[in-house]
Amino acid sequence: MADGRFAPSPTGDLHLGSLRTALAAWLFSRANSGRFLIRMEDLDEGRVREHHYTGQLEDLRALGLDWDGDPVRQSERIGLYDAALQQLADAGLVYECWCTRAEIRVAPSAPHGDLPEGAYPGTCRDLSNGERTARRASARPPALRLRAGEAAVGFEDMLRGPVSGRVDDFILRRGDGVIAYQLAVVVDDAEQKIDLVVRGTDLLDSTPRQILLARLLGHERSTSFAHVPLVLGPDGTRLAKRHGAVTLADRAERPEIVLSMLAASLGLADPGEPVTTDQLLERFDPNRLPAEPWVLQA
Ligand code: GLU
Image (cartoon, rainbow, N blue to C red; front, side, top):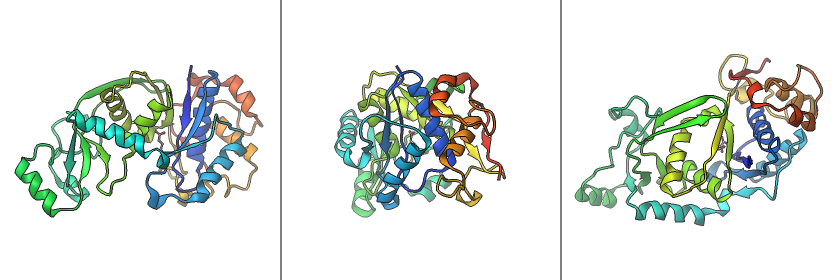
C-alpha cells in the first residue's frame, strides 16, 4: 500500500514546482492503489489567506488530480499537537529556549559536521535552574526544543538512495506559541496513516528529524520517503515568483498543457505530448524520474 499526501501551505498560489511535487505524490500513491490525502499546513496564520485554500485545490483539480475525503486543516488539529508535545515533555525530552535567530547564527557551531544547516548549537539545553528562572522572569516567552541528543538517523530514499544525518535540538513550538512544522507533520502523518511521503528535496534535512520524532512518540508505522528534485528558474536558482509565469493562473496555456509539461519533466511524456492523468498512471515508474533538478526555460 502507498497511502500518501500532498501538504501545501495556503500562503500563495501553487507554483509549478509544487504542482509537479503534487503530481509525483499523486502518481506514487494512485499507481499503487493507495489513498491520497490533502493536508493544508496552515499553522502560520500570519501568512495564510482563506482564498488560497480553495485556489490551491482548484489548481490541483484542473491538472486532473483527485483525493480522498475532505482536505484536513492543521489549524483545526492543535489539540493533537499539544498532546504530542505533552507526551514528549513528560518523557523529559523538551526544554525551553530563549535564543534569538541572531544569537544562534553567531554561536559556535556544534561539533558534528553532519548536522543540518543552521543546526541549533544547544545554548539553552543545559541551563541551570537558576539561569532558567532568571530567563523566565526577564525574557520573552521561550520556544520549546526537542532534546534530540544529536541522534544519527538513516533512511533509504526511494529516489536518492541511502540518506543519513544527525538531528539537532529543533523547535517543537515557537516562542509565539505556534506549533512547529516538524511536530505537526509527524503527528499528522501518523494519525492519517501515511506510509509514503513524497515531497521536494528542500525538505530532505527535515526527514531525519521527523523519523526521530516519530520514534520518540512511539509511532510504529514505517514510512517510505521520496524526495523529488526541485524546479529551478532559467537562471539556475530555485523557482520563484520573480521568474515570471510560475503558477497555473499566470501561464497562458490551458491546464492540459501544463500537465503535459510537468509529465515530460518527470520523464513520463515526450515534450509537447498531450497526456491524461490516467495515461500517466499507466506509465508511472519511479525509476524513470530524473534525479536532477528540472530547469524551467523562460
Ligand atoms: N508544507 C510543506 C511545503 O509546503 C510540505 C510539507 C511536507 O510535505 O512534509 O513545502
